[in-house]
Image (cartoon, rainbow, N blue to C red; front, side):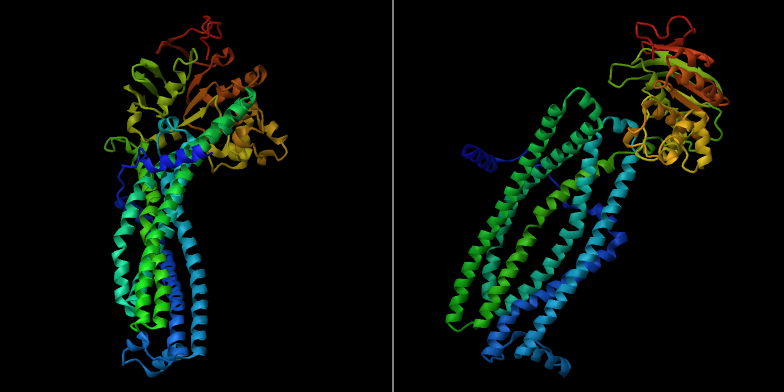
Length: 616
């Protein structure tokens, strides 16, 4: 244990951190002021209430001087009375004299200050909580909207949990800074100015001693801020990876259970958490060291002030009441100065968060990646004529998945594409959906390059049934209606009937109001597949993509769906990826995708369901 403590101390002393030299400008916070504009009145109310509360609290330290010098000793030497303008109405002067020269008046003043500070504190809390939550909403709504506009390729290159961790932690830190740190900083500045004025009125020479200690406070702050910033950056990344690991583990719980890998995954998560905890301990120790160093410097300054102030009292140059008030105010002044000095440290997390949020906001959404001058948002009625012209694509540079593919799909036809697993069939469909961009060649829809079409509009024209069907944690009706939210229940039931799932749904405990669970875990794989098919039926798009649409269905159900799929494909262009002979019988054309290229495949030639693995 001792060796561990010594190693920890050694690391603290010599710690620099790989991010310690990374510079952050306070200007990075300026763009986030725009989120304050719609809710500035709540922030202003909280600020005014905070200043009022601070003003009420500053009355209390002055009360010992009033009692000792004015009431107990009967002195009339009161700076506040001496500074009153002669033009003030008599009743105001009498009221001030009552508060500052009589015991009932002093008690009344303290009661007013106490009640006033409580009311101000409640008002401040209400205003700032409202401001805080509204500010978070403004930032998160902007960030979420921006991230949702990214291309699918972006999300496939990111770990979902990591992205969620970054977005949540960083927006919460921005909330804390703008609703707490900055407002408290303004209140502290106000308090500091008022207290400094009172201290100067009591003994200006002693205030000069405090000012001489200011460089010490600044040097302490400069020493610790850089190291704390490095730990914050490192800690944010570690926290994001905790979200990432947890999300991955929970999403893959079935695989983990199947392979009895609970202990292995537990160790992986615990290792990530342990590293994050070590970072937090180090960060808290540095913050504590910084605070203690400032408190030591303040203590030394206080001792010096007490020495010279005591000399002034003994020499008769300062009254006892002045000295007691000065001692009380200097404590308040020290706490306020500590708060102001710690602002740079408190802003470090915000600067890190602002930088990380700006990184996300700087990424271009897919709609901004195109040449706006040639983009066609709504080209009109879609007939469904699709042409792949010399299309090539590679996930890894230098390793093409498809190469030089040229394929013409006439409107209103059913085109089947077969091939080995990994041959690029689904990739071809992802290019049509513009989940990825072609490296070479073009894809044309009714003669228009799809790169010139609004990607959202393009996807509205395409219905997809994938073997990797995804259902939301919602009711059956809501999952089917996802493709067309305005659809009535009758329309939903009609789509379900076409998909052969209506009777199964009606047999469920709550019928169409049955919640299917996360990713549809409460229903069978076949039912999930048919709900996915019903969703595509309801969309009624002019183009239909069927990616192994019956992969989870038995032969009998598949045969039942054959007629439905044929009817669904009428008057729309259908691209079907399948290895089932039954479904190939409804295709007008069948193509084999092999070695990155496509060629016509004759049905029944042995290229389907063969042992070599050409299927799929």
